[in-house]
Image 1 (cartoon, rainbow, N blue to C red):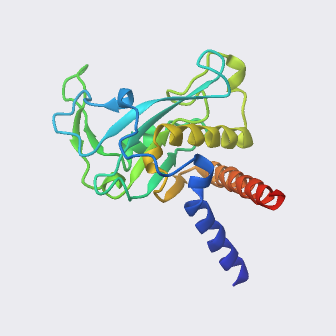
Image 2: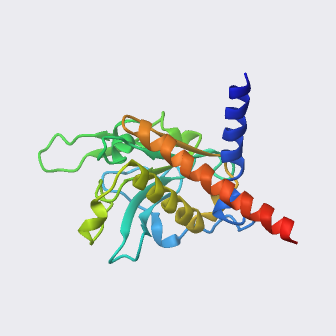
Image 3: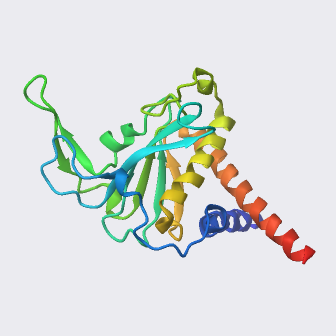
Length: 222
């Protein structure tokens, strides 16, 4: 019973304390970068059911020397100001998270063209997770999907490095999307993400405790 209580405490700490790690929570709601807003997609005739954003977050250096991690973000169709934010990671290792986006719980269903060489038709998915949550689809680590580095040595990685890189991605992502800092946050995935999820959760929790420890020491010194 004590282990369950400790687990629940840790889970609550992760969800409720992300604002401590990712920055102040008072920033206004329309702060997402306008340049990342997706306004049209080939094959989609319907209107977007919510706001979609996509782009790169650069970590471990600059665009030329670092790792450029690709994301596609789907805001919740219900209440993006309050609904959970979910980070989705496909496994493999080496599988793009667009696998989950296209074949599983993304906002669209894809109907293959009946004519060779033509684009598929996109239909709205009535069972998308975006009906009740906002989802970050992340290609990780660098070298997977559309994530890349111009420095080939950056492709040398492992589970712990991937967790560290994804944590760094989250820190920068929430800087660009601070309106979601107050939302509950969940890390999810499938297959080899059974490794990615707990190792990343450890990095997040470690970051939270570092901030708490620094604040505590600062308070004591005063």
